[in-house]
Length: 351
Image (cartoon, rainbow, N blue to C red; front, side, top):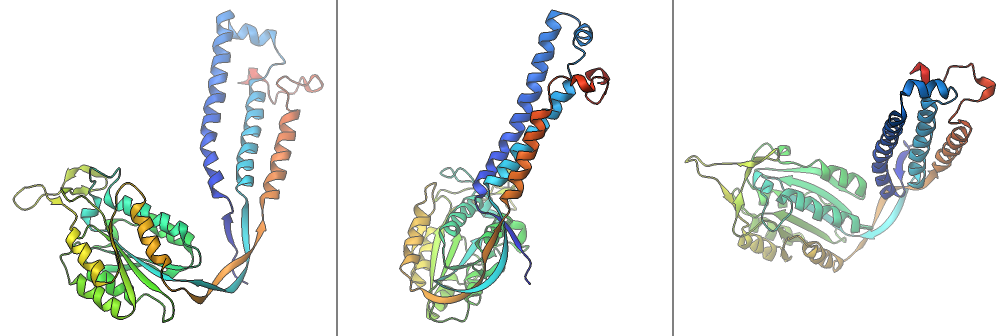
């Protein structure tokens, strides 16, 4: 029996959790206003003696019951599920290996981009993965060398998790070895010769290590296209020392600030050699759409994939929890119950 997998069918609703701190802030703000208003009319201790049945603690209990109920409700509408059955299914799609440049120059932030090159590349990849359906995708990171970040798979959730963790520190050898990344991608596809295969290289094009054009030609000989997304400005921009020090820039031996610019000619040559397209990334989705258009033209083939095909709904547990908490909250009065007047559980004088 395989281990169950947990997921939310509608994870976007989890963003509502950001409202919870606002609820807490409003509650304590209301308590502070209440206390300040009481002070305007006299000594608070006198008010306490005049209102022995009043209890601030009861207000806290009611609020926190309601707070937990709202939290459970958010999880409920996000539809938590446990995958309970693994099946091998037939899918029709293509195979894609994405080779992402993680050299230090990818930390540069160009004027026409709101984030640095690496983060912009991640955004593009993330949107592409979101639009994949029955395809397989893998991730390669490269700088002075190339490494498989994630083998080719249909598990798009894991692909996005791996994508989020990518940084220049993953490749200890700096440089830009596009050719090695392409060669590694070629060897990372499955042995299915009937399925369309494509390599997508995302880089600023500063190739210093090998013959990337020759690697693209070799990939084409194996019926694998190579597309290139160039990222960066033609004018160039300084390279930060690290992502934590975006305003401190790298310098050469003479003390001059190193400027990194997009080598568009190199990117175009690689794409031409691989019978793919070259497109420059900007702040729009133009690059992503152009690559997706090319991928849609490729021949799709049937392949087997092991997936969870049945999910047990877990939201009823959360809904029952919400109803129970709201019921308890309804019976917790702001004032003491006269039947339990001498019980000191919620006596504000104990504060």
